[in-house]
Length: 92
Image 1 (tube, rainbow, N blue to C red):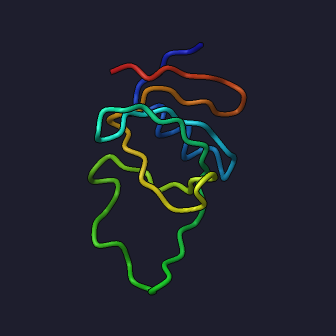
Image 2 (image 1 turned 60 degrees about the vertical axis):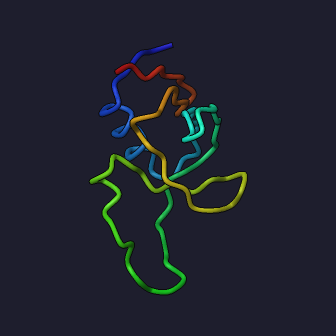
């Protein structure tokens, strides 16, 4: 397993170009979650833009493959990332 920092993890996710990846992170309640997700162009149902910029809060908008919905991945709580058949551990 490779060790990378959060900046490199963000770059790998952005470079995935829609490929499915797995991310383990800590939720707000303190539990860990494994999510299979992908980057996908977000289309608002109402036509309005988001009320905030995700980049300002270290978030990445992703599409959760299991629940078939949009989620925000918080890079500050990211623990592991599996992308392109390579598993990475995120260090501080």
